[in-house]
Length: 246
Image 1 (cartoon, one colour):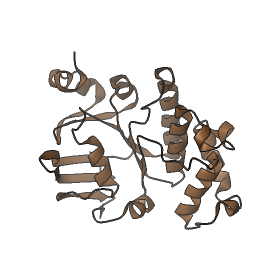
Image 2: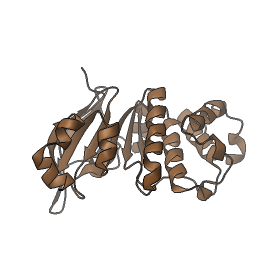
Image 3: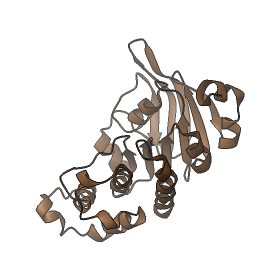
């Protein structure tokens, strides 16, 4: 099977800190790939490299065979790789729908004032995505008024409005109440399946990983310590010792 997104021999250092030391990883169509590991292991750095926010000192990243290195985040998003951040990136003083319409307009190259966004032809699609992520009930609310769980879902909806093939997510349920996490991930995974979007997500909650990932890659000091199915990886004694604890 040919990889959608492929990294080879990625190296990056920040002073004496090794964030990537020969990383090699493939992401295949239909994956829900979880990246786990201790803080500072290089997980978010890898997402930043794949989306153009950081340039590695060595290595190559390709998407459908095309080289991504040296391309801007905007150019990479237009190729089909979207990003959702740990802290939702919303226009706080605009409504949820206005946020969605701006994302849709940006993808289509229609950067217009907010007052004209209501007329863009992508509005119906934007509203359909909000419905898929369970946020149609807040579409007229200001983004600043949303509880954290809804903010997370709207942030994912903005990424989906870019029509990605692959979505990279940094701790999609961080900051969300424990009682809401599974409901949010159920909604999120359902939306990804409906849109046929492959996903990669950084996660610290092993219960979330075992429930929603089909593959797991374990980061340790800039290297991939182990990669495989969740049941195999999460039961590995060395992974338990260095990542999970107990």
